[in-house]
Length: 335
Image 1 (cartoon, rainbow, N blue to C red):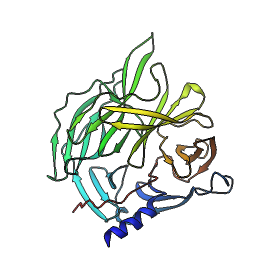
Image 2 (image 1 turned 90 degrees about the horizontal axis):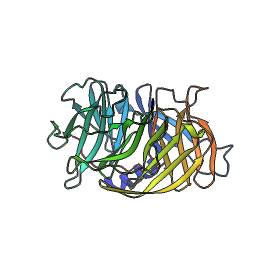
Image 3 (image 1 turned 90 degrees about the vertical axis):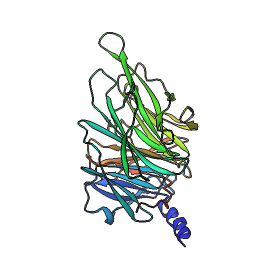
Image 4 (image 1 turned 135 degrees about the vertical axis):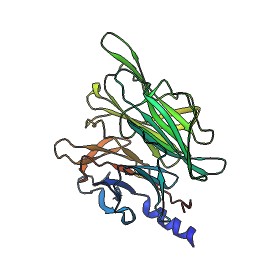
């Protein structure tokens, strides 16, 4: 039975994720069992296996939602259902000049999946760099221009500035305004895009104040498909990081609880900081670029007593893991 196979595959995927390695999508399997007790002898990363169905396609980024993976290729998009082995190619409607951001979600009324695409042009000192929005509808197989007024905020320039949760997309947004002489003040917050109403919600507060910070890292992740987690590092506080998770979240409201505060041990690179929470083993795993080895490193932190160890996972600087601690198979048909 296909449902039985789905349950079996779900068990296999619990400690697995994906990594882009040399522009190829690979499975990455983690075994964190016993690492709290045997931290000097347990290596969490057991294998990297290239995905054969995608082995001829150059992929620069992978986005996850509802068991589907949106793979960003050079001139096209590819949606992949790993469980069913199905794919769908999507052609861009227009070619943006500048940077683009993509998110995957679905309409809660009919479970119809959609892609949000918008272009932004980095402009020093100006936060409003978003210049256009488009949305792709899976059921109609077509793009349309989204009639949304360009916001007064911009997207923070880091790799992990958005996630999909419960069908909606959440972004780490920032508004820059003039502060003291020779220094801008930045306000960080969350913004939700609701794929059902096809509109942005109000600003949602983050669980820390960034208004007077010069250098910070904000990274988003999901805990199952139920909670959003945020990692924060203020470079002025000597490498310490905070991780918080939501107790309630929706397009119009959010509340937070602190998971770990002031964990010392490592400074994260601006384009690092992807992470996941392993609730069963009470661990957080944070990925970053080690400046000495020039490979990606997994920093393992116990949620109750802090930093445990760092492990070289032999992934090159240009690549970055995208790990899910509870991947659930999807029966969504793409063909």
